[in-house]
Image (cartoon, rainbow, N blue to C red; front, top):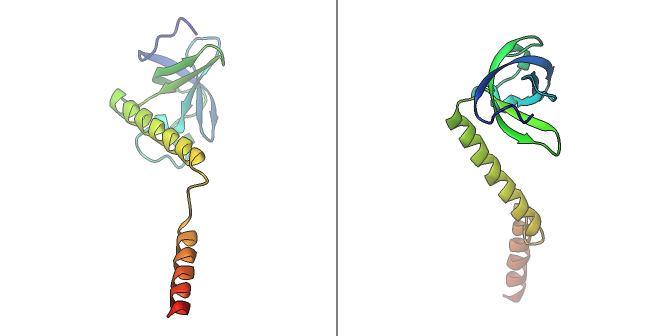
Length: 126
């Protein structure tokens, strides 16, 4: 994995296609995961319309994890990758905040029920 540079376009071969993307053989000891969101900016309904085993593709490695022995690849341009990365980080922050503030979060139904109780109590007082 060390010999594969980050963000440099390289040619690989589709080794395996799965519902969530494809694994690309880029000549390293592990295949790179090409997530379905990193194949095209268009919505992909059937990944096999885009990729099949044995296809030659141009990708760039966007992440490597030596500890997990994994790599992530993309076929998108760098601007689209940056947008997806920023969006992913924002979603992570929102999820963390939601877990942290879980006791403070209430659904619309809970607000509605509280408003009804307050109205009923004010009518009883009248």
